[in-house]
Length: 212
Image (cartoon, rainbow, N blue to C red; front, top):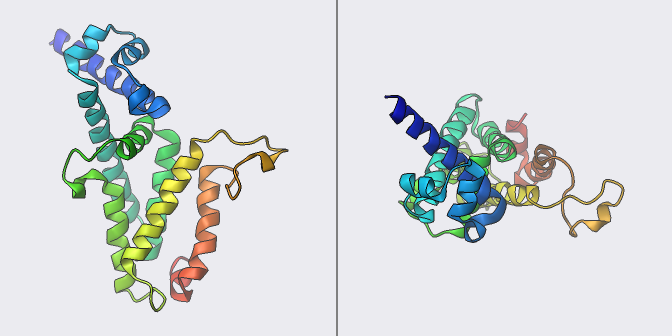
């Protein structure tokens, strides 16, 4: 039993080390030897638990999907109204990206690698955003001409954009012009709230009112 527990613990350590490497360097720049060094185990130990880098990357992605799925479901459950649920989900996602290396790594790997599973299971948070966008439409809150698919795409672009912005080195506080043109400075949650403040009036009066 002690040997099995030690093996399971080593496997988890390797998984966390892999997530850190994938998060920082992406799939191509990450090697099994780098993961082993970070986990303080031999490359042989890494291969014992995960035969290939691809297998390890998929394990990280699966863990990321599990964590994300549970988090967004709870976020949506905790408030009432489709608009408020949608906003809560985006806030939860950004909080995850700020604090959870596995989730960040999973998001980066999802961009860099081809889907390995059913598209519906590939990204739980996008599926939840799409579901809540349909609920917003069903509640009759969108402006004339707007639809759920467009809202879902817009919210997905916002979340992905904030996550990507988090990876950039911010410009000095006293020299914000050194950042990219049009970029938002400040903490990710602050960026998200500023974007929502801009979007809500554009989406329509009923949407803005429902967010209160």
